[in-house]
Length: 217
Image (cartoon, rainbow, N blue to C red; front, top):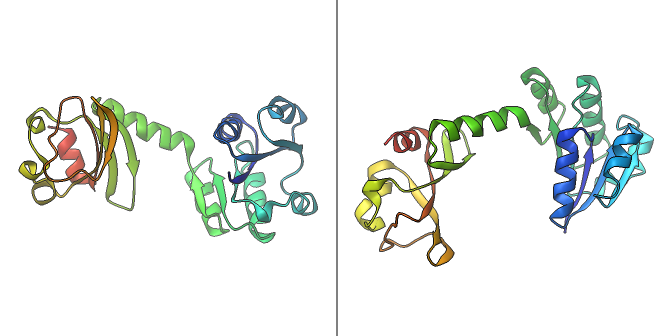
């Protein structure tokens, strides 16, 4: 179990906090609006009405001991920036902050946010990938130029071993894992003699250009 504080209980903050709590983590939810705090209090470990730009109030919550503090303030860019800055000033090691726009995100990075979140942008990208190729079930960007896809196998791969497909040499991609449905199991780092089936889901890592060519087959 980890400890997280979620500051700002709009839609994103509410769903993030409640989902983390459902997953078994200790969640402190914070908002200046008493109604939002009331709405979430039975769905997290602790819910507090507090001003996230008030240093004394934030110090009293023990945020420095949290595994992460996520600043989800979306109604005011200034409040978001001030709250993020305060988290770093009081010694929170891992601060994630939601950005409204790209300039907002750049400011959050400059004042020390460990990670800047663009929920709407990320959702739009995931949806675009799914609409672009319905065979792509999940999309996860990695370092610049590389991604991970969960992909139904192309027809020409079915019935062949990974050795026969020679994907690393031919396409520069690697299969990290296979989700099998018959029998139902996950094979991590499948060996060269693994035979691809039409019921498999392949988790593939590689350069974006190679993955795009694969999606367009």
